[in-house]
Length: 292
Length: 267
Image (cartoon, rainbow over all chains, first blue to last red; front, side):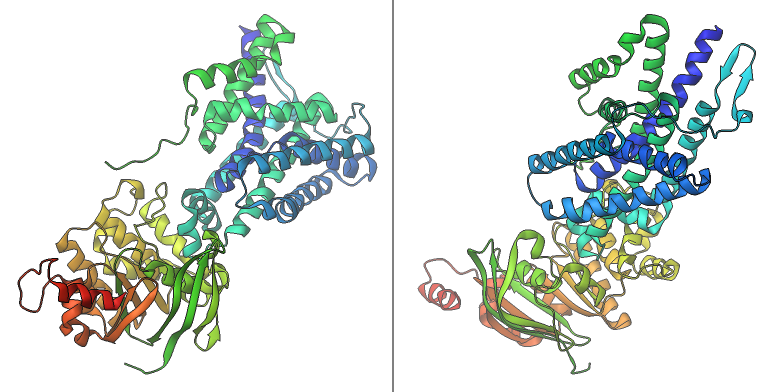
């Protein structure tokens, strides 16, 4: 029973990290219908940027974290402005090829700068953050993952529900010509969604880096896991991304704990195939409102 | 009514995808405070004219290739919709383009996009004042509203932007006659109370000419007739081709060569 609870807790915190990173993916897809294949690389860039700032430049942790977030936000903006904007209105395949190209370029660049070894952050999470209930032990990093995950999911939820900019972003996702006719700055919305996506990617990249160590290949393969998560949840549903993330996180830890650790990495993709067969729009995929 | 010219379209040609010419030299004038209606059959170029004004041609790969559009004396042809809406020209698209997955109130809030960071509570009250039906539905998802509510919603949404020139593309499309009447009364009230200059594109010529001060008739990408709304209503050709009542009151048959020739002269 203790083992079960331990896995449950680990799975949920891992799941929130997946959910957070999937949020970035869904946001881009929702506003501009772009499938971002450079997702894992954005996570890796965030993780390495934080490494460079915290371990190498020796900045205080909070400052390094803030700078990483600002840096990723700016990177997202730049990516949209220089790479994706010229492709607005082009066919989907061109855009996918572009993000694939970006992914390879980033991966090569990171390998060139940081090499293929596993790096570690200096220990900075206070031990007080870890929790212990009887035999269940929750490491500090999982508590942090849980808190960061929940906090940002709530923040983004509020942002999209109530802020004007959030409503404009949803309006563009909903009906682009109408948004344009009301003067919503559609290109700015695209840029903002990329910037926010890069920011949440960086955040989940950092926390995953703390858990698994920072490695280019590792992080970009975790980035690929965003596909099972979002397809399970429904490509354009933020709530679905959260639930999908938690489900995949739980499945992974339980498979790893009870069946075999080598199956752990595969299980999300098995789910992906299964979901595509029985419920191709995912759990919360857009149900087209049709008035008959 | 003032005589200041709000919008001056001077002999514009519009071409889609570099090859398809839709407007062939359209000129029209909209004076401040007026309601101008633009009539014509399907495919005459009415919507294209509106889109040329509001800058929405661009996403459809259309372009003003000749002529000029001057708004308050400054050329605006081929500007981006972001710039044009911020000058106060707002177009209400044809066919009730609501945001399906946003609530009614959120839909209205999108209308404030041109006035970044300004309070909107008062504008909401104004819109609910014109359209009380929306107040009752403000938390409902727009995708589940009725056609009449949606037409009110999209007009209200445009009002949130404080437009100086409001372009309405077929506000009567697919609505019950009684609703059409109600909506046109509200459009007239908006013109009178807010001082908004309006341009209404309509198939329902009868309704449009009742609230308009001035009217234009388009055929095949050209303006074929223009006049004060009163005169247009009395014009025998308009009566026959658009209002559906011939001068004699009886339906004309296609055999009537005279009518055919008269019609042909227009095209």
